[in-house]
Image (tube, rainbow, N blue to C red; front, side, top):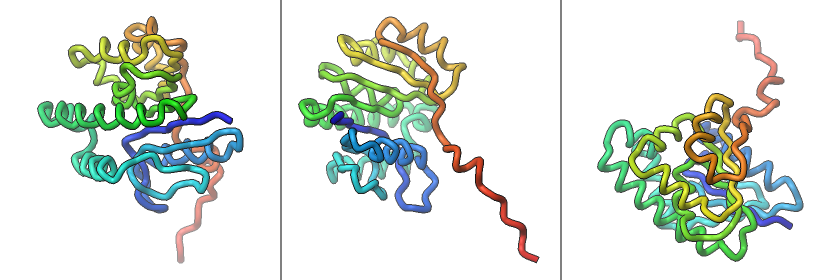
Length: 201
């Protein structure tokens, strides 16, 4: 069995919520594999029966407030001081979560570069997904150095969801990673097979 600690700052709050739906689909896909155990650190929402929650009540309240504010990337563009405060709190909360699960988890599946910052000084292999909005973090002073500290001495695979991000990630973080490879994620094949419904008369 492989134990996976899955972390993300977005997650659908209900069965009809579209926000973060692809995060749920990734978590569900992992849980569908009987050889994988999954613990999820993410906002509260509907979970696969085989997905165990790893979030505390305080962390859930923090993420709910962060979502109301538009997330770290939005704050970086619009309110830098608040972004720094929220980012520091997020990193601290994630570090505590990773430390609690360090002996259990074989792989830390971290969604977004911001979630990797909490892994400084800890053990375990990392798989880190990257969105285009994540790259704004790399422009902030000290961020590349901090990420390299988080990656040091570990097997790390960075997975941007588009090919255009590979060169920049390889240039800035490639020497600290095992691999940088594009893995498109988002809408599954089922969406392309959806039949359009005719408009009512």
